[in-house]
Length: 96
Image (cartoon, rainbow, N blue to C red):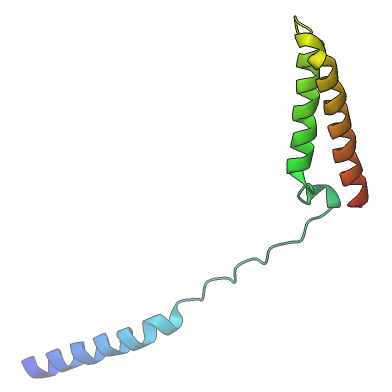
């Protein structure tokens, strides 16, 4: 009798071991990434150039408010900064 109980328990354990993984539902599929809804979400083109323009504008403000003329070089530096800003803005126009 003892052998038959152990045999039945072994068979029941084997049935559960084989049937249980089949009964477990599969995980839902991973959602697909959605494309950007509008063009504003796209990364900004040439962020380095735009950052350089902003830095040059800040430099021009510092030069405009400088306490000294630095022997006339401050005015030349302001003109050079304006020319650099103009060149960078032209670069951005040609990218379109």
